[in-house]
Length: 271
Image (cartoon, rainbow, N blue to C red; front, side, top):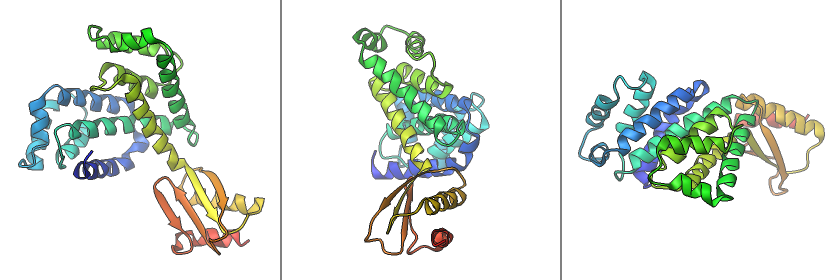
C-alpha cells in the first residue's frame, strides 16, 4: 500500500482505537458487508479513490449505498475512510478490510484476561491453516469456483469446531470473500494483525544492570499502572544503558533517561 494510503489507513485506525474497548462482532460483520459492496463494483472503487473528488462527495456516495443497511457506528467508520485519500482503486477496500479485522480482533482481545483472548484467536487461526495445509482435498474444496460462499464457510468452520466467535467470523470471511487471495493466506494476514495487537500487552524492558526480584516486581507494577493494563514484562540487560531504563510496548518506545514519564519507575527501582 502506497504511502498516502498507508497514512490514511493509519489515521482511521487511530480514530477507531478509543472505541475498540466496546468493539462488537456485529460491527465487524457490518464493515465486511460494506466491503462486499465495494468489491462488487469497479466503478465504485474508482469513484471512492478518485483524487479529483472531495471527501464529502465520496462519503455521500458510499453513504447512499449503505444507509439503512448498517449501524450509525459502521456508517461513521466508512464515512471516515471515504473522506481520506487513496493511491489506487484497491486501497480503499484493503483499508476497510483491515479496519473490520481490527474490530474482530479487538473483540477477542477484550475477552482477556490480559492477552489471553488474542492468544486464543491466533491459535484458532493457526489451527485452521494447519488443517487446510495438511489436506489437499480441503484446499481444492475451499478454492472451488462453483461452490457457494456459504458451503465454503460451513466446511471451513467444521474444521475448527472449538474456535471462538471472532475466529469463526474471520475464517468465514477468508473462505467466502478471499478477494483474490488464497483463503489460508488471508487467514495468515488476519493472524498477523492479531499478533501485532498482542504486542500492546508485552513490555520489552532494557536496563543497565540486572534487577533483583523485588525490583522486577516494582517495575512490572509501575508499568501496569502506567499503561493501565497487565503487561507481560520481558527484561534484558545492556550495560551501555547507564542509569537508564528503556521500555517498548507495541510501537511505543520510551527512554526513561530522557523522558520524565517513567521517572516514578526509576525511583521505584532505586528502592
